[in-house]
Image 1 (tube, helix red, strand yellow):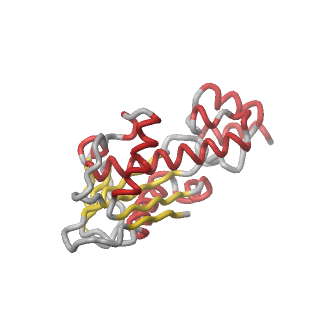
Image 2: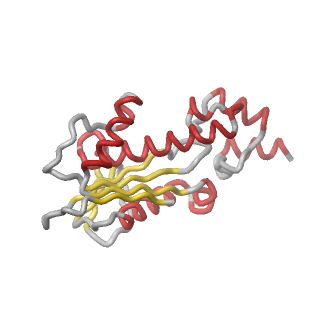
Length: 202
């Protein structure tokens, strides 16, 4: 599933997209990738690694990024896709698909981390990029807020698992729920704790 947005009044210039993902470590839910081309004419204050911001601040920036960016896109890779591809390849594919979904294509892509997705333009990986590059920080915020909202929705369907609190990460509460209530469709079966829980169910 993808979401896209575009400011149609775009000047011709070197366009750089920042790309990041959220949710590589959790046992449940999708990995979500964001891609953002910022507009220098509409600066956004306070962009930083999404993990270093409060939830309230992330939510406010999420709306501001969508409103002010030249273009943005969000891509999800499901637990089934993660199980099929592995989490690294699913993340890289999600990043490439988020870039491809941008309503205007960038000339250059910057990605948080140390590995680059396959995209049809120049691309560079920046370790710690979500804290040093504004466009990557914006992408990290879009990805994290979007993913957190998906996990809150999952919580409403399965409140006994506590997804709204731990967002699918392997906390003590989540591990206890897996043992007590079993594995859901939203769980990543290729992850060791989920595999173990499945074995106990059979």
